[in-house]
Amino acid sequence: MAKAKRKKLFPCGHRGQGQICHRCAQAARDQTQRQSEKQQWEATFAHDVIDLTQFPKAVVLKARQIIAGLQRRENYRTYRGKRLRHNRVVISIPVTRHYRLLCRDLGSGIVPEALVSHEDYNVCKPGG
Image (cartoon, rainbow, N blue to C red; front, side, top):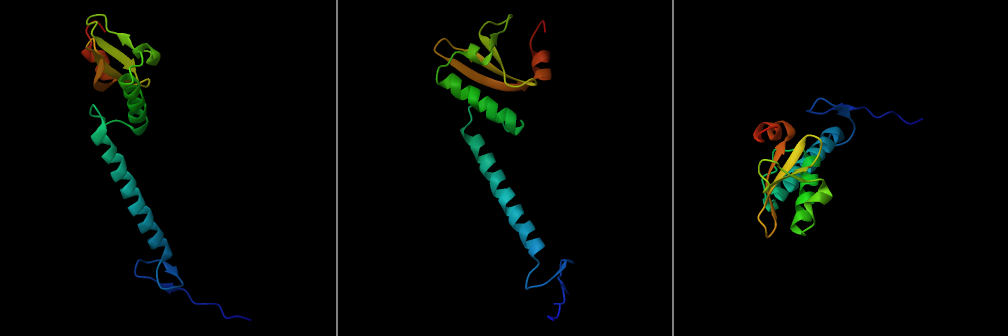
């Protein structure tokens, strides 16, 4: 009958067999992977036309999709966009239930200006 190996106590406080604590090694690998994914995500903001850094990931992806469509000269109404009543040059496109993309029609094309929350949008538009 084989003799059971004795578990040793690692400096981190975990018990196990072998030269290193595999739980801490896995946690370190996960941490470096999360950091690299975060750096890659933050690097994508350098290519954006407007500042999208403060918004949730799903909102940023949807806004980028709409902005890309507008740059391909797709009609803003395909994204349920509407012109504002008080200023017909400004177009409001809903990104999600809680966020709006404000764009300006320059005649030659539609240029995105800002992404705002629905609360900020309701405050900034007159007569809202």
